[in-house]
Length: 111
Image 1 (spheres, rainbow, N blue to C red):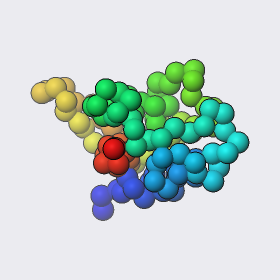
Image 2: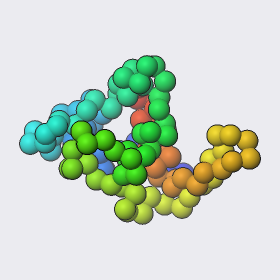
Image 3: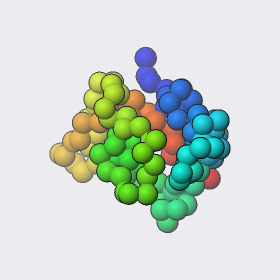
């Protein structure tokens, strides 16, 4: 079965980022910096959802110093089998299926 990005979010992200992705989850109170509102990623990026950057942050591959050390590096865990995503014809990038599903979910909740 196709993995659910929404289910992955609820089990792994909602405790800090809130069930609706807007921050303020039950574990967010003691974190500095506070977990950001994930429904405004595209707005903060000039209107386009930065899918590759988002997946890189979730994976733990690329993060700025402003990221909380409380944010897990999900790439260290099993994110499922990989699928090849072709953004440029003939050039494919293997991406774990759960990471891709989570990115799709996050893109779907942008406002």
